[in-house]
Amino acid sequence: MDNITLSATVDVDDESILKSVFKDQFLDSWKNDPGFVLYMSELSSCDLSKLNHEPQHLEEEKSNVLDQIRELAFNNYRTFIKAAECSKDIFQDFEIIENKLERIMNRLPTLSGEAMNFVQAAHNISADRRSNSMTLSLHTQILEVLEIPQLMDTCVRNQYYDEALELMFYVKRLEKKHMVAEIPVLCSIINDVKKSTQFLLMHLLSQLRSNLQLAAILRIIGYIRRLDCFDEMELRLKFLQARNSWLDGILDAIPDDDAYTHITRTIEACRIHFFDIVTQYRAIFSSESDAAYLYMPLQNGNEILQDKPRESSVFHSWLVYRMSKFLDVLKKDLAKGAAKRLDSILGQCMYFGLSLSRIGADFRGLLIPIFYDAALSNLKTCLDEATQQFATDVMSSPPIATSVSYSQGLTSSNTPTPASGDLQPPSSLQEFPSLASYLNSILEAFNEMRLCCPAGLTKSAPNVITESLNCVVAVILEYNHMEEAAFTESERNIFLRYCSAFCDDLVPHIGKCLSLLLSPTKVRKMFSSSAAQFGSITDELLNIDAIVRPLKKLMPAPES
Image 1 (cartoon, rainbow, N blue to C red):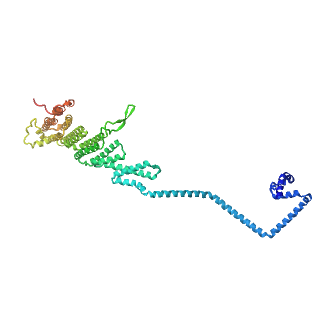
Image 2 (spheres, rainbow, N blue to C red; image 1 turned 180 degrees about the vertical axis):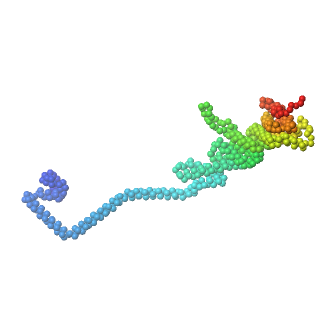
Image 3 (tube, rainbow, N blue to C red; image 1 turned 90 degrees about the horizontal axis):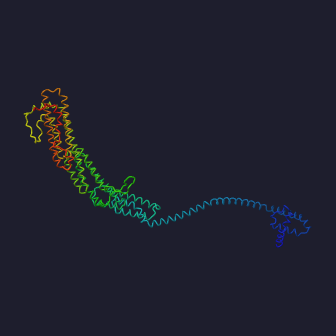
């Protein structure tokens, strides 16, 4: 062994010599082959004769080795065949194993991912189990929280407002305590409670639109204040809007078939319920002098001034609105026919205004133009109807024919004329029914106006009556123009008496009745401070000469 090691060392040292001997046939693998190293060591120790016989010796060794191989192969060929078959089978098995290993290697990443998913799922299941266990242990408390929206809705519908407000405040504390966006269930509960809170507010406002006593209204306003949905100004507005809606419902329920009944019941309802609303408002809110002003920007040149109060408060504005609406209803009902009982309506309105004067809402001054217009319109309507009826009577029943038929029934044509101070209609008009009917219509209008006669009619009523009388004169002149050529002497005399009765009896009697009705002297004394307006009124309200002048031209001049 030591010799082999030494020879190997020598061979390494003499590697250059060996390469020179073998030249290009020397392989690098030989220097590491122990058999080559041993054989080269033996050769280096042989003499020359032995080296000469060495090739023959090698040939013999080669022949012996080949013979042994052939004998071994012949004797053990079955073993070689089986070994080959086993090698083949082993090779095939190794190929199968290699393929399966390759498939396993390909599936290992998927298996690894599934294993990770399984681990994660196991962690999630474990966390869910812990959460479920905790939920089960806190089941009662969680159920109470989840039932808050339903419980609040039930409280609102059953009018348990205190309990509903407690639930609302509890949810507000939850909202401040937790991150709502991170807890969907809590977010849903808060939204449901907000909806129930809105429903509670609408329910409270709807109750304000019903007939409630002061105690109930105070309680409802207290609930609304606890909701903290409105500031003080908005709360005043909501209260007045709700009570105004309730009052409108009462007024709308009054039947309007008869104008007089409608306006009288409207006055009574307004007078009663105005005081209820005013009492409730002043009991709930502070004095009007504190605030209750609406603020709005005002334009002043190129500058906008902020936070400037309006001139009137919310409550005052509501009173003005209600009074304006009442006066509009009054005008409509008077126009529909209630003006026939003007005195009764005026008395009720004056009492209504006197009642409201205790709260600073006296509107009686606003009634004057309304009743003045109603009285004047009623007078104009009566006079227009009388004038149209007169024109119809004259054209359908001529004065000549009616006078003849009437004079045949008179027992005496010399009926005494009434005294100047007597208000009885002139008896001469009995001969002419058209004039008598016209005078009756005028006197009927005066009787209606007598019960409620505004002083302002002292200037306007004479003008209206003068227009009506001028129309009557025009009708008489038209009749004369159409029938004058066909008049006989007796018909001519009758027509002249007709004109004389109109000029000398009817018109002066109307003027006397009008002076007694309006009494210019009393009007001047009543309005002595307003001399510029009423100082020009004379005792004679009608200009009789101007009215009868067209007919006087048809009549003969009186004998001196």
